[in-house]
Image (cartoon, rainbow, N blue to C red):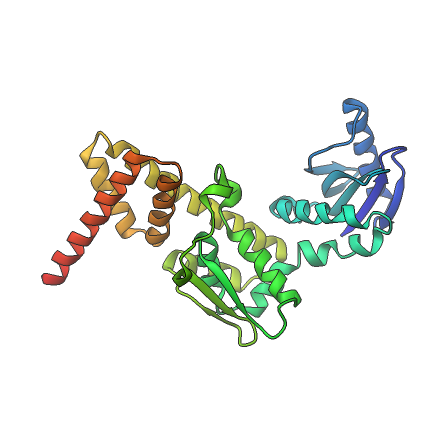
Length: 306
């Protein structure tokens, strides 16, 4: 793990830590090529796998500037440990660098601790309660923190962990779709002092949590969280597609009912589409969901009678 802060003016290093000469030459040469082709610093962030001279590295880089100077920050790790799953964590951390450019080293030296290792701290702290945390991330529930130290590292880590489990980055117009629920009864209590998450979960989240609880590699954990989100998003798209087909096909409606009835994450998928239909005024989708809900309640009542 290493980092380099280059000056955009002359492409020379301002701060370079834990980076051997060969890795430095590879990164420096790559950035020189990028700057030569574009004639400007990379405004957006990028993650690139580089292989050269039997050295494989994963590189994150982005420009950051204050009122007077512009720099390119690079976070580097061995190529076998890809940085791509941590893209949003690194973006957020780089945003914070703008306030530390007068003395960037103390801030930059903590990048691995804050952006990578937090997942292992949360897994270790909530090892038997990861499933509710992952369930919370898929819901729109407000979070109530119960702790004697609200500014502790584990509280910050847990917020970041929940964010990393959320589907926000995979959904369109997410600031609207994932607006917090305004119902005070939908508030989740997390007791950090006693390591208790006072909330439900489901089989879908439990299955994925069980794959993570036994891991001790931050990169493996973070990749599995990405796989978890992709699986949830694919299921949501399947349910959405069935309901769109149901507008003209009664059999597709029944398929949608069966899908949500048998799915381990059915309640969350239904709530996501219900909220989406209200936010975007999708009247036909909202009507289908209302009919589906009534049909589910009817089938449940019949089942109870028999």
